[in-house]
Length: 279
Image: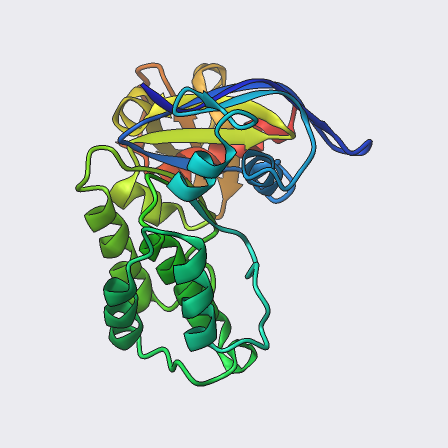
C-alpha cells in the first residue's frame, strides 16, 4: 500500500519544471527527499499539499483529493519551509484554532511538547527564534494526529540537542505502522537515523528512488591518492581534494593506498549530485 501515488506530475514555471514525475511513497515508512537547492523538493511538497497547481494525478492512500478532500486534509499534516500561520499570533490562540479545525487535535500532547521545548504560550511567535518557530510548527503538525506527516526542512535552524529530540519524536510517531513520513532535508545525517527510503531529485526529476540499506550497500566510497584510468572508469562523482580524490563506485577496485568504505546518505548525495551536475 502506498501513502502517496504520484503519476505524470507536471509543474511548469518556464525556467524550472517538474515534468512527468512518477513516485510512490510507501505507507508505514519514512521517505527522505533530498536534492540541491532548486531541485524541486519544496515545489513537490506544495503540489502534494494543493498549494501549487499542476497536471497529473496524486492518490492519497488510494483516494482522490476531489472526492475525499476533508478526510485527506484531516489525515495529512505538513510543516512547510516557513510557518503557514500569522507570526503575530500567540501559540495559545493558535492552539484553540487548531483544536477547532482538527477533530483529532491532541491538546494534552501539545501542552506536554511545548513545555518540553520551553515554548511560551503567551508570547507572539514573531518574537520566537527561528529554531523555536520550527519546533512549534512540528508540534502543531504532530498534534493534528495525522497518518501522513510531510516535512520540508523540519530541523533547519534547530540546534543539535533539539534536533536529536525532534528525531526521537518522529521515531515515536512511526511506532504506529499506519503512519508515514515524507521528509525533505539538507541535514542528511537525520535520514541516516530514521529514513527507510531515499528519493533524490535533480532539476525536477527523480534521480534515484531506493530503500536506504540497498542504496548504501550498493555503493562504496573510495579515497585514492591518484586517479588511474582504471579507477576513473569505475568512478562516479569524482571530487578532488588536498589528499587526492574521492568518488563512489559500484565496482570492485584495487590499487595502492586506496581506502574503501560504505558511504553515508550524505556522501552518496554529494557525489551523485556532482555527477548529475556534469550531465
